[in-house]
Image 1 (tube, one colour):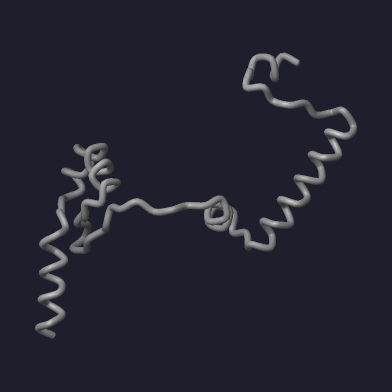
Image 2 (tube, helix red, strand yellow; image 1 turned 135 degrees about the horizontal axis):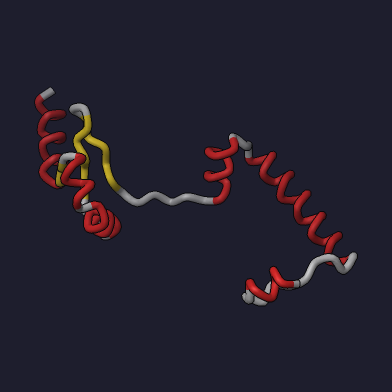
Length: 106
């Protein structure tokens, strides 16, 4: 137990902990600090919530937002690709040049 407390104390000495009010007032600065590797924790209801960057991929988003499995995402992707190819072959699709006005205006 003593070893666990020592490890916790060591971890806490590296982490800056703040209240939600202070975090709200300084959020942009805190986000920039977290991106550079600083350990930042926000204390909420007696617990610490860590602020740190995470990697997010399209499959993570689709899984979380739409509750899709990897196989479902692949199936939808293949279906959309086939529809796009069909539209190109039928002359119903054109390349996007970056000019939104030209694309919308026809």
